[in-house]
Length: 311
Ligand code: NAP
Image 1: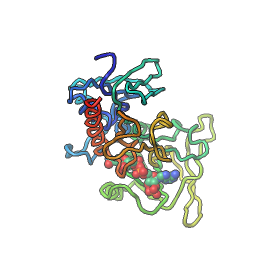
Image 2: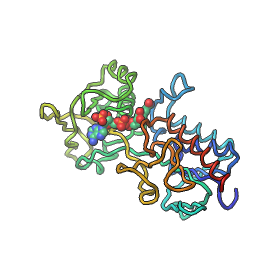
Image 3: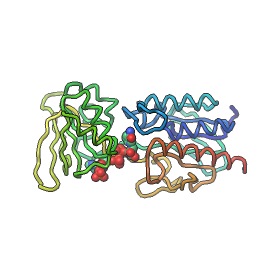
Image 4: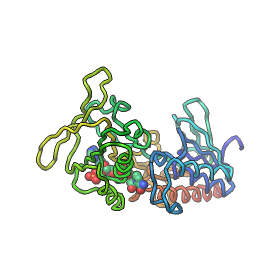
């Protein structure tokens, strides 16, 4: 690789991996930068049922690995590290990693994805790892044969509750409305699980803990928004699946974004800076799925190629 890449892809989720695949297949020197492991948030999904080509579904971790392998087969390189600084307005774009390494490229595809939203409950952060979790596939095994609660009404809550229902004694799904936004297919499967109970119109008010030194989660106090009644549910684990927030803090003041932090770029992925393209869940758009993230990645790589040809 030259002293700088043609295209740098920031993020190794489905958007980033697909962007790297398309850029590498266009014979561009391509560098993908990922913090932890390929797949992004997808890697924490137990079962992906709606990505075409996998009739029996596939676990998100394997899908992430496959996507990265496919990009690397065409020459895309991956470096692992946390990006601490970006400089994107000059023709040569530059990023710096936490270990001090600096990487440069003529075009950048920003695909940082999103992270689970915290509920903002008292002691929520402190109890992370002591009963509070945002990832059922990562932490579910710790609760084998135990009782857990899942908070949320989207696909993540549904998939997590289904996964946990297979290993836990009881799963209580707590949702602030009386209908879930999760895909109907997931909802139907959930209703068929005998060990899944639903608490509708309810929000968590307080995380309860054991009175011993470990102080682990022992339950959750919820309030019914319609009746005002409160109820304590005993549980060993509390899985929060209340949506996501975009990982765009690093780009604040650099790229245009909306009030929620989603990057403003159209279907062409063109951002407010020349040579910088936005792809995946961090982009403001109506549907955030693995498929639409991958689609963004393909478009962004094609737009980056066009941009570089004009430079
Ligand atoms: P989501 O679709 O945004 O759903 C978030 C859920 O959390 C909603 O039900 C919301 O309630 C609830 N919520 C938000 N803030 C809350 C709060 N402060 N207190 C209590 N509840 C709160 O997020 P997601 O389920 O993580 O899904 C994100 C994207 O990934 C979606 O596009 C989804 O389709 C996709 N996904 C797909 C799969 C799959 O197909 N295998 C799996 C996981 C995720 P309301 O409904 O009342 O707004």
